[in-house]
Length: 401
Image (cartoon, rainbow, N blue to C red):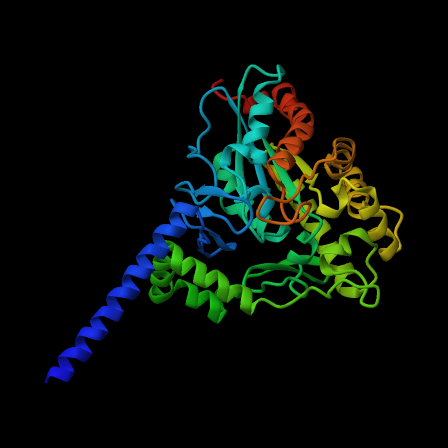
């Protein structure tokens, strides 16, 4: 009996030590601001979107508090009906527009709104609404536009196209993540494939058990750290993906003219999706702007880094995607704003990195605060021109009249 009591006491002490250790670890991670939350939830149209009213802290790259509004977007609360006398800009894109890496007030959308407010071109108030979701390609962004964005009655729609992965993300063959909707080419026409709804992973994500686990992880920094470590261990190694022997990596395919059938088709699907988005904007009396974002290598402040990549790929510059999309806009009659070239000039002149953070290598990953600020400053004149067109050409869309 005495031995049993001693064993029980030891087990209790061990359990108490584990609990105290976990509590101390949780407190330490919170004080350090370390967090790897899971802010996404299943969506029947787009496959996934942000969890409405989610709160958390992001430290995987950069550092920022995350607050998702009630509609499921990283933005301040917005009414579906614009306030009287207000013109609206809707920005669709992937993780660059979602921008978990920086505080909300430093994102492209927030800074574009401030830039437009500082320009004297219209008597109306301006709102710039952010509809960015990580991993989205043009197909999901078209569905987002149809099922969610039009409810907010935007006057201008900006599609922020990231050359580094948007081409692959719109291709069912090339996309790294398959549990989402895709548009396919059948008999020369785009057709929606929403079979993801029957995928076991999508159904699993909807299960009460999975949703309980996600809520539990989001309430514990220790569990978030463990989940992040597991994801890193499970992720494929791609360090040797890009080499002269293997040719361009997936993220570098935007720099070269496509030769493989899968990439030729990815380009055709992407261009058709952009054309469809332009058509739908016309149908809703909204102006459409395609903005091409910068890939880190394009805007490295060291010209030698860019020259080395150009030599390896056998290209004269790193703007094949931009030139092709500009030609598409000229053919179809919509403006294309190339942000990477002026951002390259700025980075080289000032010797600054527009991508990268203190907890990541410089010049890699997403835009930092300087990148968002410069992109917003460059975009503001073109967006102001389009908003002026709304005032002059389509007075019915002037709010409060």
